[in-house]
Image (cartoon, rainbow, N blue to C red; front, side, top):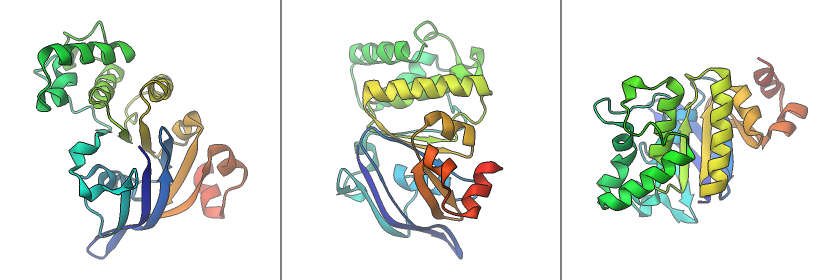
Length: 235
């Protein structure tokens, strides 16, 4: 899915959380949104997911206004920093939730769940319950639940925030492989410079609701657009 955002504004009373944000996300691209707490990263993600509505501006999905079709029909999936699994359901059932809501047959659901579970390394854990899983395994379940719906746009909101450095690296490697396999576009929201470096693609530096710079990670490091960007990257 191609995403086009133009002059996006989100106000909460006198607070302007997003202040004229404009960018493009190409099909199958992973764009990292990097910024400190309160920069507007989460608000941007919520506007793209349909969980929040901008005060002004335009969001286009494949050149069509996102408001023309209900958000669910766009096949957008969100993975949050907390897995938000249902404790009394096994891994298989947690992954299958979205497909059941769509009215898929049991045979088709089982086939799809088995496929995605194998892709993310959960094929031997499908009958286990969330309480028996590690943090990394739980986040894999969240990722599987997002991808099982054949999503076209994947939104990650600090999704690896609670994992250690080694697990973060493994999950990012997995994400890049899955993107190649499934062809989704991805907005990856984080405050971690290490994660941005591992993704090694385009990075948007967002602060106080404004884009300070949007460039490749390599270019950002070599030629920051301002002292403010340089200071943020070195913190």
